[in-house]
Image (tube, rainbow, N blue to C red; front, side, top):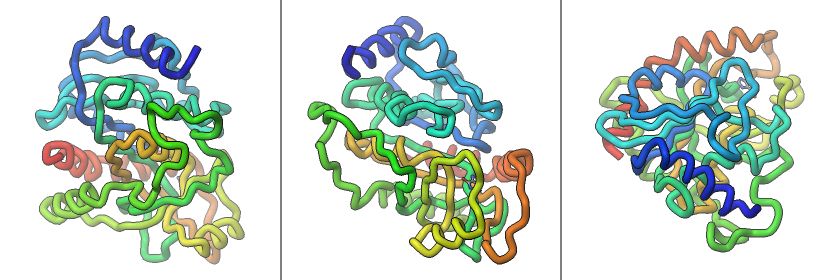
Length: 275
Ligand code: HPA
């Protein structure tokens, strides 16, 4: 079965439950679950019930596809995402983005992505928000490997502006108005699942990254492949400075993400309103 046929089956199932045409897609990473409460839900589908959707295995993620409105805009949100370290292929990881898309899916042309990330820029602090201005794909893998589906996008997609400058300026404006401090920086995606060694943090900082995480880049690549406008934001959940590195647990990472959640929720809600 081709990707297009799979997506058509997913859409056919979704269409049995809702005829809604969302304009904005949101991938809720660790720490953005709070946004779910702000959504006026029309219908919530479990990933398990949607044909061809992979199933989420990480405890801190719930696999739900939420259709509704946020700040008056029609949205579809992914509560829980898929990661390479869980054993999924990057085609599986990014499948929901194909389903959301305008090209073959639900009609979304703007994708907002959030995640939890380790901060390597010494000016960053635990709990900061970082608007992603650019990224480095260090996963040693790419969701576009394999025959190109020309009807979806080009074989060699341009990546000169992977995160929309327009959305970054809008988020800057909104954060100023709301008096929410935001950092800006380059996000590097690694495979995980282990956190990095001091030597790896030093290396990743030296190659130009400000924050490190295990997601977002594959989804961003697929969104760009299909010409979607993308915005990305990280919660800096731990300080990854090689010379003063302290042990950190996933529990602490989630705790910090939850603490920063209200300001990210506020920012995202206002951003969606003004898109
Ligand atoms: N690496 C280090 N710290 C982190 C990560 C990561 O991938 N994600 C969240 N905090």
